[in-house]
Image (cartoon, rainbow, N blue to C red):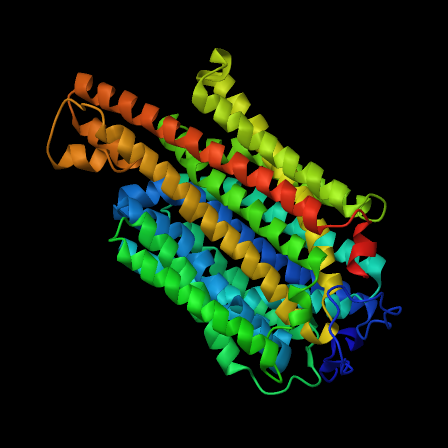
Length: 546
C-alpha cells in the first residue's frame, strides 16, 4: 500500500546556532505539517503502543512470579532483589547512550534492534536453570529495553507535530501501558497456575517477532540531520556515573564492607563532575544542556522517577503479601490488582483531556496526593489500627481499594509529564530527551526496588533476628532472611512449630511493609515539593511550548 511504503529517512531540521542558551526557551513557532500520512502515523502508534504493552506485561508479571521463582530457583534475598532491579538498572545505565545513538543512526533502526534483543533475552530468561542465569537474562532484557525505549517517544514526536494530535497520541501510548499492566496479572496468574514461571517470559518471544516484522513496514525512519561526531567520552562518563550510583546502592543493600559503597559513590561523583565539565565544553555534547536547564522538563523527569519509585517499591511487597502471607493464588492476586490497573488506564485517558484545560502544577499535585493516599492505606494496614481490615475479606477489599488509588495517581502523572518532556525537546534531540526521561523513570523504579526493597528485607531480617523461633540450625537462619523461605521451612516442621514460625514470619513481614509504606509516603511529600518548585501553574500545552 502506498501509505506503508518506505520514504527516505526524514531528517530533523538543522538547528540554528545560538549565542546564548536560555534556561527556558521562548515560545516556538507553529510546528510544520507532519511528514507522515495520517494513516501511517496511527498505524505506527499502534506498533509503538504494543511494544510498550509488552514491557508493561513483563514488569507486572515479574512481581507475580517472585514466590514461584523463590520456590524453584531458591535465590537468596539479595538475589531476589537483583532479579527485580537488574533490569531497570541495566536499562538506566544505557538509555542516554542509546537515545543519542538513535538520533544519529536512525530511531526506527535502534527500536527494531531493541525489539529483537528483548525477544531473545526473554527466551533466555524463560529457560534459566538458576538464579544467576535469570539475573543475567534480566540484564540482557534491560540492555535491549534501553535500545528500544528512547525511540518510542521520539518517533511519536516525529510523527505527530500537531499539539492536539500529540496529546492524544501520548495519552493513547500511556493508556496502552496501563492496559498491559491490566493484562499482565491476569495472563501471568493463568500461566503460573497452568505452566511454569518461565512461561511468563516465553510469551514475549512471538510478540517481539511480530513487532519486528510489522514495525519494519509501518514505522518511519528519522534521525538528526546534523548530529556531529558521536560523543564517546560523554557517553562513557555517563555510564560510569550511573554505574557508580547503582553499584553503591546495591553494595549497601548487600551489606558489604563500608569501603565498597563509599568507593563506588566516589567513582560516581568524580564521573558526574567530569561529565558536567565535558558537556559545557564539548563542541558536540551527547546531551543537549538546554534540557538540563529547563525547569519544567527537569520537574517532569523527577516526578516520573518518583512515581515509579513508589509503584515498583509497593509492588515488590504487595505481591509477596498477597500470595505468601495471605495465601492467595497467582490468578486471584492478579484479579485483586486488576481494578487498580483499570483505574490507571481510566485516569490516563481523563487526564489526557484535562491537560488542555487544567494547569500542570495542579494536575501533578493531585496525582501525587492520590498516589500517596494509596500508600498510606498500606501503612494503616501494617499498623493494624482498623481491626475490620486487618485480616480476611476486609483486608482484601482494603488492599484492592488502596491499589485503585495508587493506579489512578500514577495514571494521572504519565500523560502530563510525557507531554511536557516531548514539548521541551528540540526535534533534533528528541531521542536524547526521551532517553533522559526514561533514565529518570528507570532509575526511579530501580531505586524503588532497591531502597524500598532493602527497607522491607532489612526490617524483616532484623525483626526475625530479635525473636526466639523455637528451633535452630540452617532452617532458622534461612527463615529469618526471607518470608517465602520461612513458609517453606514451616511446612517441613511439626504442626505446632510450623504454625508459630508462620505467625512470627508474617508479623515480621507486615512490620517491614509498614516501614516501607512510610518511606513511600515521605517520597510522595518530597515529590509534591518538587512539583511546586519546578512546574509552573500553566496548562500542559503552555508549559511544553515555552
